[in-house]
Length: 392
Image 1 (tube, rainbow, N blue to C red):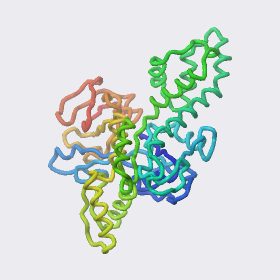
Image 2: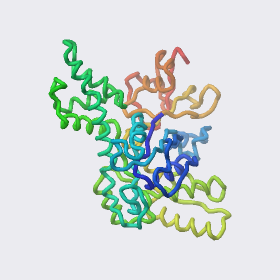
Image 3: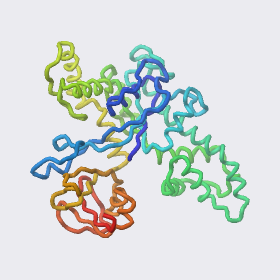
Image 4: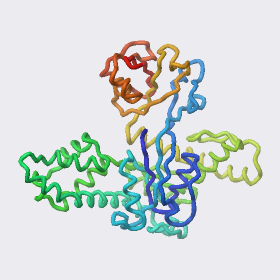
């Protein structure tokens, strides 16, 4: 399962975002380090379900009238403060939790109502642009410190005639979340000495930055847009690669209202149908409705979708047993969905289902066309595929 970490300074709204995106109930309070132990929960990426091409909707509980929600892991960890890479605050714990994350949602207080330490101040008293480089800088320094701590072992290893710098770096970097493929791509883009003893701090910092950029892509969530100056949102847009304006507090209110049966709302919708509510609730929903009209949604679902489908470049593929009815062995229509990397093949899908299915792979059928497809065929978003395997 894809793992996405929520990062940011204290009081930026990470735990509120987590609660809204997972409908879990972490502690949410207006003081630093509310989150001490990391919260791990299931959130969902939103896409269009293939059942819309059929005469009935599918049997998955994650399909809402043709809108499909595909599970991912969401991690809410302790807030970061300057000096976290040196262990200040709960920095080491935070950074260690990022090791296995596939991507990061950097939650920024776009309203400027918290200072650099995460302490509450008046709205607009802190420039949110100052927080943008914060996470990247701390992560780069943390990774560089890991390299520095382990560098002497590379220097000693270089005395062996069999030593190869690329192999040594691959072994080291896979320990902090990189794959061998990641390391190979990173090293191709860098110039560096073959002898570890000749490396400088600048070489190690460059490697740390390249590692972070390759293995921990970041989407900025400009949170608290209901209180933010739109000029600051625009400045954030101009300063970062991907910025998603959001109001985690509004999303949490909508999801709790839907759970209670007071409204009809699906995560990511830009509209809400209001049922029986009190006058105060109706007034609150009216304010949220204005936000939905202005921004096209609360931004929480859009941020998750941006990470999964744009940054991590995933596609949603649906394995079935019956290529005609699009059902599994129990007759359920489209019960499962797999998030695969763009360019994935039927063999990749087979292994995503189960290693034994992959080991016994024989062939695959495109269930939309009923035609057999080759093992090198590139799958696409929304494909429905039957895998034929000796293990199935």
